[in-house]
Length: 458
Image (cartoon, rainbow, N blue to C red):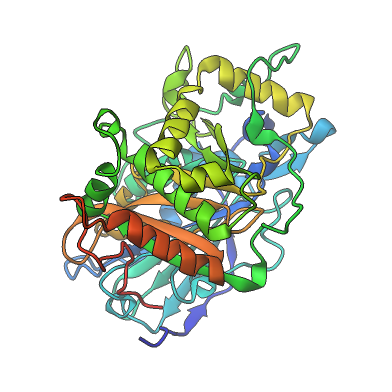
């Protein structure tokens, strides 16, 4: 199938300030927020069908609602500044978020039946305005609304990750949706309170945080930028059942996250082919909102997660059955406690806000419950809502997402965008096919049904 190409006509980018005057003040982000590994822009995209009974222009509806929502979320209208000890502080200037109005000569139908990343012409649907993508002294949100020829539209958002995680972004976009539908204020008032995840005084590291090890890249295993392949893989009930069938009975009640992460880590390790005695790392993004006492207040929209790491020798991970990886991941997840979060914030201050280890590392973020696709502007429900691509971040190719998805057959499942070097991707696909296709297992997926979304606009 030929790659889909189309033309996008953009109006000049504009800044949308809050609809009313807001305080000019300085607000520190937390010591979890401003770690080096979150100092990047994360792209999110939502596709909406045309609803013939709704005549409203999505550009006007969303632009006006953003302005009103920024009255409550006015830090987003400010700019980050870096102060002593690399601390990030928001100067609430009221300058606004960047907004782009656009039109594309393409219909939603042309993107295909199964919408999944990577999306064609993404750089046109989420235009990188020159000078806008810096972490400091730049807009904290860039939002582009692109009308489609069929009457549908695409909403693309670029978020400075030091401000919020996926749950925080969804909370803001939900407020925009509520105001677009006529509310005067958000149903969940935003809460800043970033000091709740700051380091203690004096800071003291009380837990082991090998996710922040300094690991030299001796073999050049970080993915070369000019040889990257993006593909998405769908895991429905059949694929998950086949993977469970590979486990001993006492482990089959593990969570889908644990199962899928163990499978992908093992397949990816075989694909990148490190020396058998080299360590490989699996970093699991664990939402810590429910692990703190007292709980973070409802409405808190900062980053509230840990990155605990499972570590194994590449040879052990590749040669052992799936159960080996799974047990490492289960143990790793269980380490995240309140003390772990406090210790992690302390480490940031003591060690100068380091980046997590990326050499031979794989990071997964579970967005199946984040609700990105549920944001409602009164213009219909999103057909797809989630990350615009995998492999984002300061080191491309390291991060993948679990995105809730319904395929064209109506099957609910999880789609996972993966980014690897071209030769490694070939091996990864073969390993994954073997993992979900087992002739000796009655739960297996029929041979040849690889969990890849074949229908694609690419």
